[in-house]
Image 1 (cartoon, rainbow, N blue to C red):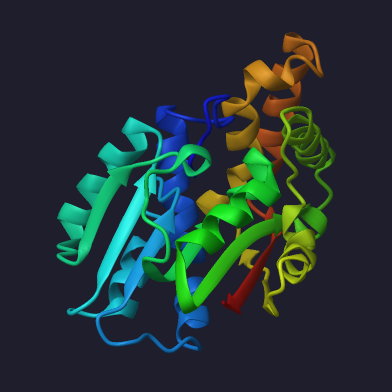
Image 2 (cartoon, rainbow, N blue to C red; image 1 turned 120 degrees about the horizontal axis):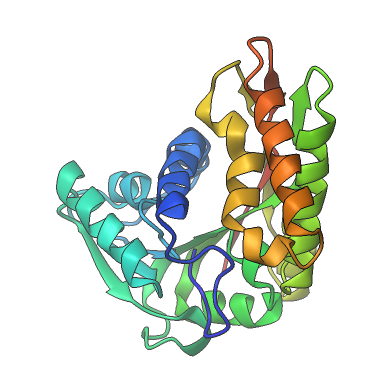
Length: 267
């Protein structure tokens, strides 16, 4: 994810770099499946906005092919350092990286055949400004692909009241910072408001006991502590996180992810 001058909620934390790479690996099959439906022109150029430490860099590298180019951008230097290491480790010769703030971008207009942004609107808000930037960067006939979450399916089973309370608190924390963890619900409407006709997909994953992504409520709450302490006293927050950790660590605990809403529209 990229951030504006006001600061992305989780920017630069070591725990966030690890979470973002796990997140990218968890959702990579969904991205690859969507891209399989979108034809790539010869020598395609793709933009990954807010690439974090991995994002769609690998799947876009595959999509554009050896003759194409992928540019990954982020405003956080630690994220870009992690992305550079990933690109090097994966030998992604057609991928380059650059520091860029989507709200004050230096990227040239009408330069890309595909622009992808995942989990940008949820933490940052300012959907109209983001959509204007995304569309500005696309060539005529290019694809705009957006992904954001919907909380409705995010659950831990059997009954896990502390984990569910953390999820509700995280939702409040995003809203208090100007974001919206349910931004995915609005993606089709936002795209139609700028004259685009989106294809809409929804993805929910089941997480078996012990799956590292099952700990996402704890990871988010731990990383967001300074923000969440404005909503819940520090001692109560720490106790809630500990109880949720215990619930998730149960040998029979399993869950479902939030719903990943994917929209793709041709300009």
